Amino acid sequence: MKLILFRHCETTYNRSHRFTGTLDVGLTVKGRGQAKELMRHLCKESPDIIFSSPLSRCMDTADIVRGDRDVPIMAVQDLRERSYGDLQGTTHAAYKRRYGADALHFIRRNYDVAPLHGESLKQVEDRVVAWYKGMLKSGYAEVWVCMHGNVLRMLRKHLEGLTVQETLALEHPYNVVYEYSVNI
Image (tube, rainbow, N blue to C red; front, side, top):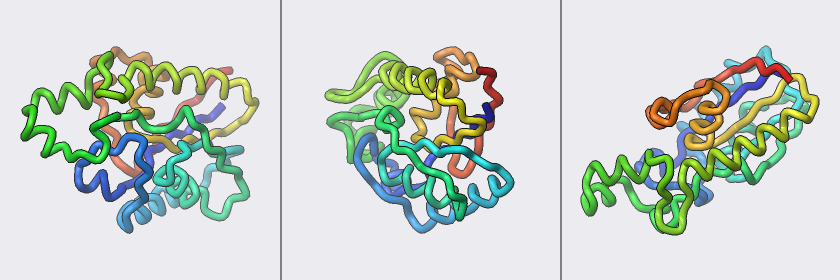
């Protein structure tokens, strides 16, 4: 199976450095342009299906990237972004002012600790890897997946055999494609 992964493109919350999590925030004009760049980059590909987080920033990115292909986009709840719980909507700068730079890094990149009423990265990993293992049984030849940064981080950990520390150091720019050949 050919597996193509990409992150949703820029949102207003990304631009203002807010904990977005499961809040449904749309793409910016720049984000729509980034999605069109992805579409051009993938113009020679032929997916059987596109899986996406149900949040509009992913669904809209997937729809733009699909272009005029007659390919279904399937919303998958397990691909939703990590819940930041009570922090959702808070700017990183406000959190840093209140708790310090180390605390900001800790809450964003700690593997085992969840924000209050939120999810840890380990919990995200558990749900996305379970979805991935089930998806492998689908029989598709080429699959595209549009997801969020933390979900992509955890799936790459699984696919590339990364350590937790290597995984936590990953950054995912917009309009970058990660391609894998998966033996089923």
